[in-house]
Amino acid sequence: MKRNARQNSNVPQAAFGLKAHSGWAALVVLGKVDGDLQVLERRRLELVEQEWQKQPYHAAEELSSAEARVLVKSGIKVTRKTALREVRTAVQRAREYGFEVRACGLVVGTPMPNWSVDEILTVHFRMHKAEGVLFRDVLAEAAEACDLRLAAVPEKTLLEYAESVLATKASALLQKVGELGKTVGAPWGKDQKDATIAAMIALQGTATRMRSK
Image (cartoon, rainbow, N blue to C red; front, side, top):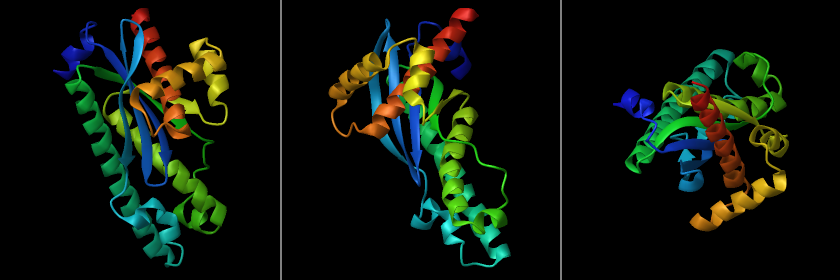
């Protein structure tokens, strides 16, 4: 059923926009019908089951090396499972609205060296860095597991990147994001706005790829 829906060009397209934080992510789902964008959903995705899993490296800071590795591994395992469940559920909700999710725009930061758990725990800054990367990574893995084309959108240059990809001035993009926000109401802060722009970029990439086939 999933493959047939993807091959049917008459099924309205949709894309996710995601912006991660420690333990949760802002999700905006954009759909496109006859060239018009609409917000299908605006939601907070919970990515952990227990409070300490929001900062697994901090939780392991005072443990022995072996205990720390076990704790961090268990925390990441839960987060991966939870992220996959949340993304799959969001895909299903979009289908119930009559849309097929084809892509996911994920707001990302700078990459992290391939540090071990021990190396991360020796420098406090690295713990913050690793926890920030962790939640973006599990969302990326979940999107790919759901067969969504992933568009990584750089947070530091988000507007400049969006201008280039969408061939639209930043002022016009921000105006459109504001108009979309009015259709769903609060909360519509920076997280939701950034996620919306990421979803726009993901939708644009999907449309380009479909036309090229």
